[in-house]
Structures are given as C-alpha cells and as structure tokens.
Image (tube, rainbow, N blue to C red; front, side, top):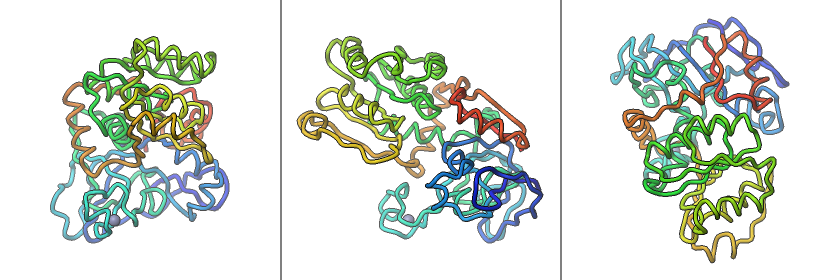
Length: 344
Ligand code: ZN
C-alpha cells in the first residue's frame, strides 16, 4: 500500500510503498477513506523539538480517520467487514488507576495512533477493535474523519452545560470553530469568538457565532471592554481557551464572570504566570484542563449532536489527494485554512 512515512529524523514526509498491515488478535484492518491533518502532525512534519523527543522513525503518521472495515483479526466480534467507522486515537491500557475509575482520557500508559504505532496517512491501517466508532453513512468521509478532533471541542465546550449560557471562544482554528458549532447546537445563548486572523473570524461567523472580535486590531483592554459591553457588564459564563496564547489566556480569565468556568485546551509554548487571587481565587471560578476525549462519553454525545443538527461543513475548507500532502501542511503553516483533509 501507499503511506506517508516519517522515514528518518528531520523535516518532511515521504510517500512510500510499504507492506500491507495485517490485523492480529482483537485487531481490525481499515481501508482509509479520509484522514485529516492535525496540529500534532504539523509538529512532526516540521520536526520541531517536541517531535524530535516524541517520534521514533520510521513511522506512518496520522490519527484522524474514517474508513471501511476490510478484514477482521482473530477474536473480533463487534464489527463486520464493510462497516463504516471512525476511531478513537488514544489507545488506553484498561488497567491503570485512571482507566479503572472512569478517567481513561488521562490513562497513565496510553499510546497514540500515528505516534506510538503506525497511523492513518495510508491506504490501510490496523486498529484494535475497541477503539472503533461505528459511524452513520449520513456523514460523508470528509466529515466522518474529523470526529476525533471534533471530540476535543465537545469535551471543552460541554464539560459543563452551556444551554442558555454565554460562551467565549479564544482561538478560531479548527478546534475553536468546532466548539462554536457544538455550543450553538447545545443551546448557548451568546457566543463570542476572538482570533488574530480575519480569515478564521470569517469561518467563525459561518459557524454561527454572534460576535467575532479581531484580537489583531483590538488591544486586550479593548477586547475585554467589548465583552463586558456585550454581556451587559456581567461577563461570560463559559470561556473556552483554544489558542494557548498567553494574551488570550488572560482574556479568558478576565472575561469570565464570578462563579463561571474556564476550559483550557490550547497549549502554551512555555510557562504562563497568572494573578491567581484576581484571575481565579476571588472569582470562585472552575478551571478544567481538557485533553483528549472523555472515553467514550464524548463520542456518544457527538453522535447525538449530529442528530440535533450540528453542521461542521464550514470548517472543512480543503481536500487533497494524499500525494499532495505538502500543500496541506503549507496551508496549515499559513493559517489560511480550517480543517485540511487527505484522501488516500
Ligand atoms: Zn490506563
């Protein structure tokens, strides 16, 4: 089969012919229909410091996918050949404290598809049966393959109820845009989005946000004042920090009302300091670290959100044949895109 391989340490990927993978005990062979680019893959593509420490080539990368079950390994009972599936990319151990107490999303020993084992930038991929997610044929491949990153947004937005509540989303990359759609579908009364890219603020408007504020042209003080005005001086019920930028992090804490909550999903590049008394303690807010997806509660809620009308099509801005992967990574670097899909 053809696959995108990180052949050796260093930037880039190579499209190679590699042996077809074979499913072992409890495993399933998936014929990949669509696979999407993630920020993590861009780190691996560029070969930054994180990737140098985390990835051990040779490795087929990619972890967001959908496809059809092509072959069952011994002992597989829950799926059939031909079934349309997506997959959870975090392979949890099932036996650590976290896994055994309903917190598998922070499993101590989890392995990640496309990082610790060969991934989905390929015509075929082998996965354990237990991470497959049966998907409705109503979702075309370019939407079905992004359920994994969409799950991050579901977790960030709905870690507490947003129905009838005001939501601030800092950062309108794919995760922030997905979060806007999720919050809207879940009944948020008001959604304010901020970003430094006018292109991405345009996508946020397409996702139904009420106010798209430009953090490039407005000072942090002006943004804060605008959010106070829009909320009649009350502040925000739920701030979703999807950018990881220190300025946006402080904006989230400054904008949330006393007794509100902040979901932290964006990853800062280094340590960030806070005025804890004034930004968190005296405000009595709740702060959630959001990583991965609640297993598998997030996936069930996601399926329900699609039934409730969640429409993520504006976020899917580009599709390329797998051989043109470099165009996709260039786009991610430029920021002039939503989600980019590769078709093997
Ligand atoms: Zn575990």
